[in-house]
Image (cartoon, rainbow, N blue to C red; front, side, top):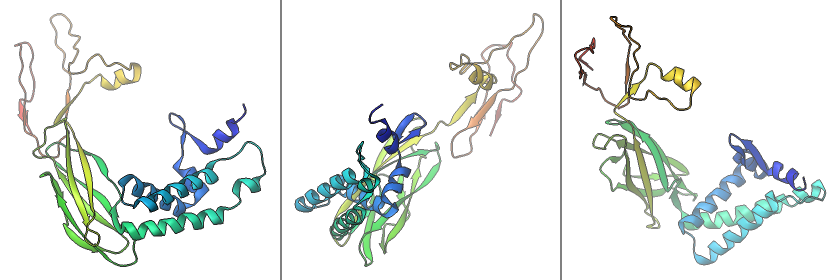
Length: 269
């Protein structure tokens, strides 16, 4: 099929079919060029560049994308790959100009984290100093359950900022959102990072037949119930599993609604 050779070259088969491949991009560009391109794309998204520089960056990224990834159906290999030195110089040159403007930034504008109910989760965000000199920064949480391990410092190059998410006051099986900010003292620019905490269940029930059902059927008919096949005049015993999904010790107790149901354990931790 005309053009399919091109598509197969720039797309990598993934779990759900053909998809853009970061690995292939890195192979085509080189690791440093990939990092420079991502830095410029983030700077454009955040609006940290001035109007004039932003237009130049957009143009350079467009030409870099077109000349690096677009492959014509006809032509020689030399035509496909020629000029890469010029593309590299152009990309790194405008990245250096953008770095002087940006100064210090944060690698993520938003993060989503699974957090155990009643527990804590520690996550890392990267502070990136794009200049050659140490850069001072301040950090502040606007949400009580987001706790910053450091609220100020100075960094040369890239540095890590540890953030603890405390779900003690968050509702289980719900999503909570909060924000913290990092300020570049030199420029006064403030970077807000939105945090989404996906809080887990406290207690989870696993059906004795769950593994069997998952192997045979997509739909599990015995969720939250147990099936007994008891002969007339007889009895049957089955072992039920409960899992503490929270980040803290859990006290529990059990009870029955009918006199013909008996449980061996009525409470525990």
